[in-house]
Image (cartoon, rainbow, N blue to C red; front, side, top):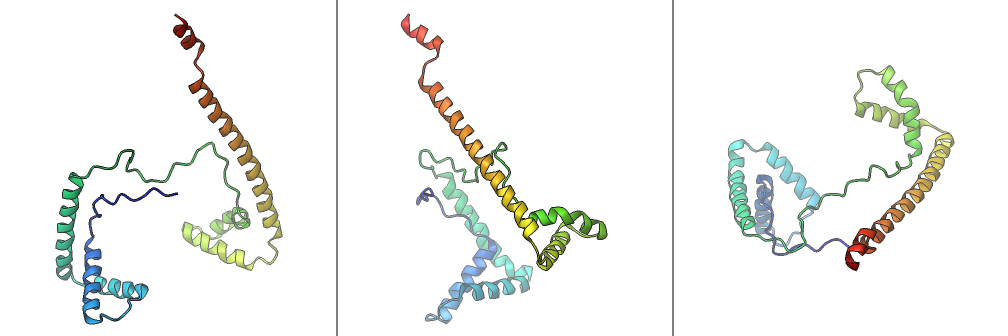
Length: 192
């Protein structure tokens, strides 16, 4: 269950482009109050308009964004997060001891042919090599060799994860037992 959003936290500062889109939306609603806005089309038109604007035309929206940034900074200065909120919403780091995930059939294919593609095309970027490998993969009629390799690697990964999880559970229960059971030194102090 994701954590609940703090309703008292100030709304983030608006960028100049966001201010521009908001003005465009307001103008559109005034001109066409009964129209439903199709977001994808509206967004594309706004983007095209923004790119064609001069710096002088964008200045208006940069000023709006600057004022909103000042508002945000003022509100954040007085904001106190709820107890227990660290404010850090970043993704948890992966355990470096965790088993490597299973590779797909395509990745086994790439491992076999990446060197050849790179050798024949030394000027290719990483992206170019990936595109070429993708094209070659589409032309492979019998992928069973690579699918077998992927299936074997999946079995390897599942076994490794079982062992990893068991080791993690054992380590976790060992930590709990150490935390709840006093050491010999502690029990001797209590008896004095």
